[in-house]
Image (cartoon, rainbow, N blue to C red; front, side, top):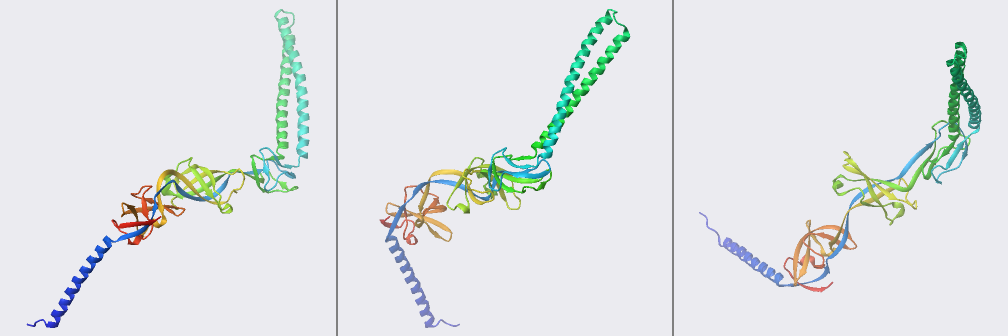
Length: 376
């Protein structure tokens, strides 16, 4: 059996002595740290008003967009509006050649007038025939005229009444024809269907157009639709009537405000987003349909939300903490971070406005550390 050599005993003794010495040193360091007073600068927790919102991205569309088409074929005679012009409902945009329409209308009007005069004559004849028939009825009852004479008068009345009804029918037909040609003349005048601006002109003077040919596009831009998509997970936070604010690259720094109008009833299966539509007033016509826009939907307003200076938050391995200073001691509190505003951070956790927090030497602080406040 082998025995341990003296050198081995010596090595074991050295290791044990080293461990004991290290323990004593650590206890001494901890004691020194606990008794040390740390100097810190402080800030105050502010209570601020906060608006909770949901982000939305999309594009602007006109309130209304109408393609104005011809109601009749013909050659374009005049153009009264062009790209960018502001128009009112009913104002003339263009006219087609009216010569044929006017000739047809004049002919129809003359025919209708002739038929009316004929009807008036037939009406007088049937009135006389009716009076004569009534007189012969009385004479026949008193045996003062024969059956054949009475029958002859009845036949004459029937013929006269038939001629009157025929004339009445011709008047109805000519009236319909007259109205038709009035409409055809009216159709040669192309008018604006809405208040708006000319987005596009498709025709020129002298160009022949067919029935239903597109001639203009008119858009209404006094207010616009902001069609956007939001995350489907935000559906429970939004409701019609909420305030919507948007920005566009063309007007950096300017915010346009409107209201949420419509919400899609379904989530898009591919993008997992929800389509919404807001109404954005555009009285100065600064915004243009087609602009890409970024926006927020204001879902809630809160007051007294705690904010701390950015330097008050110490983050380590995913944990955010602050140190509240009270009675000369630092008290550690773990928090979550919300929004950032003007060098301040929203903190969510056990903290209230008015409390004092450390904003320096955070890496050396610990819960219960004694502190000396040097200034704010």
